[in-house]
Amino acid sequence: MINASARSPSTPVSRRRYAVVLGLLALAVGATACTMELVPSTAAIADESEPTRQVDARSPSDLTHQLAALLPSPVSQPYTDLRPDEQAIVDLFENTSPSVVYITTVTRRQDIFGRGVNVPQGTGTGFLWDDQGHIVTNFHVVQGAVAIRVVMQDQTAYIAEYVGGSARHDLAVLRVDAPPDMLRQVQLGDSDRLRVGQSVYAIGNPWGLSATLTSGIVSALNRQIEGLTGDIIEDVIQLDAAINPGNSGGPLLDSRGRLIGINSQIQSPSGSSVGLGFAVPVNTVQRVVPQLIAHGEYTPAQLGILPANQRTNQIVAQRLGVAGGVLIVQVTPRSAAARAGLRGTDDQLGDIILRIDDESVLSLRDLRAVLDRYKPGDEVEVTIIRDGETQDAVVTLM
Image (cartoon, rainbow, N blue to C red; front, top):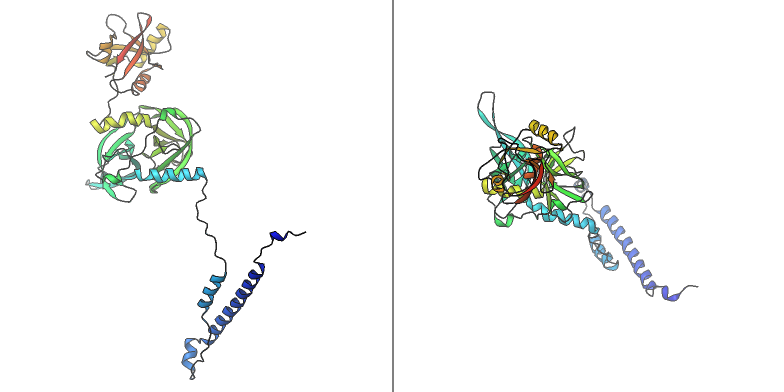
């Protein structure tokens, strides 16, 4: 049994409407056919002597307007049906990309006649650090450049000033004289809170393709990579997001658009991304960049000691029955170590450094890496062996 309430009360009206529509369609087709038949070609007009007979028919365009009035209007469907996770990524890119810049460099070379000529050196990425126009990038992006060109998101180009750099950390700071409304700095995150498996996003200019977004995950934490000077950069982030030449110096972001690192290197037999990328952690950046802006160079926190060479340290460690350590040969007068009472080697064996805070110091490389995590003025606890006994000394680094 059919429920009468389920039937549309306007069914007869709809049938009459569509009958009218069909009739108008037939009339439109007929009128179009007549028009096509009665409008001759240019050649026919030239040959015929009698005038063309006029037909009293409504224009097809008039019929089209009548049809549009009778047919139901289509429902507009705006394209706003992105999933929440997709919309979050779109927002991340749109909010952060104005802070990312495209860097090209020029270097000086000698031609075959011995004349100095400027030649393009390479490309890279950077990002705005503050409202003073400072831009952070990788040191290797601008190393040896005689001219540095920075292109903002709106394609405005500036010649950048080199402020300072640290090859040891592969970090450099530039500066451009741009209007304040264009200096939109990146929001800073905390690389110490990263977790393996969390999402990351890289914005850069791979192969010169500006404002490119790629995504991936944190593959590993606390990696060590060798910097340009052979020094080890600690606590590096390993990621699988596509990083290619031109991405260097660009921001690595978490899912909330906060800066967590600077894309620096890849490991690849082909020179292109194979999912092994590395980024300098933002906490290292926050420690180094302020010194580069203030002084043009980075000076790590110092104990103020002359350590023994690695071979001597190994011999001492073996005789003391410990896994490793760094022997103090000499303490610099009025240094942090001198003020803390640390002792060098004179007519007796000097102090052997075993730990700084909770970090083991087994070698000279460990000592440099651990001190690099601190800044002058930080207070640390140094664990030493003196006269065969383990002791702790509180040291204010300089």
